Image (cartoon, rainbow, N blue to C red):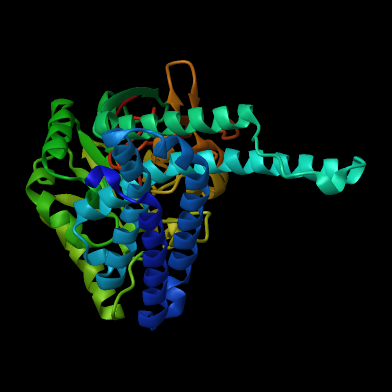
Length: 449
């Protein structure tokens, strides 16, 4: 009986359910601006699904038995997933979701919808060519009034769309299953003239962008901490974005992060996600408490949080300075709370300075131009877009079209002094729970005179 399902009626039922859900948005949303973007995006997904179904149904429905049911369920599962996402977001504020559920339902939507959108693009392109061919025939042939709209689509475009969709699905699934926690230690040796001799051989480990709200458990993080401690660093620097949304994401990992060890201390800064800017708070008091809780958390696990401030590290009779600036990004969407002059207060310009600044655009726009005496700046933020190609001889990522410095080591060729910038590719993930070609990074930097 199950094998004799009326797929046409089920399809109409899905359409009706879609209309009901949109109605729910309209009736229950007291703050329409909050749901406006949701509705537009949701409608786009629905139209894409039905447009693609009109093309794929002939292939799916001519299959037999369990194969047809499997393909049919697989096709419409993405729409079901989007129903779950949007209905849940109506009932429970996204900041209160279980972090694992939130990460993997959004990741699942991305993995399943990205191939569909790719296929839809080439399908649409093929239909545009059909339309152009029909219009041309109508205008320039004598029997134009008897012309019918061509049934056949351009085969090459369909092949590209189908092959591309399958490739995208495979890569996204592979990146989620095998690459999300495939940690890579990148070792950098820097020789800088004005490094005090006493600090020759200083070992620094940099990590960034943990985004604890995206981790499904402690086990991968325990492994990362073990890798870091095995490097026996003198200093550990964390360059921002401890959470996705709220401080509550950190509590389950307090004991793990508290086991990080560095002989000269652990220093951290805030990233754009750490301020709670991506959450709709009931009151400003709640938002302020969330910020205070994050500061307290880092203090309680033994991290020294630098908020537009600096500290001095001494060895024998020599000193180096660690300055940490709050988030400053060129993009106006990100909080601009950084005050570099305040962070450098009391430091002589001839001193050896390491600056921690989350967003790499800060170095490109400000540090490399007006503060060329800062020897080394460490940043994160880009994640290398969690997508790209990375080999010993070649690196590419969409991130390079957004950020001048997007990953790895950069030198300021215009500075009279030696000035370097390193951008860490991040240890965690956000949005898509996986990585393709750009592995999660632990950076070991050895400083030599």
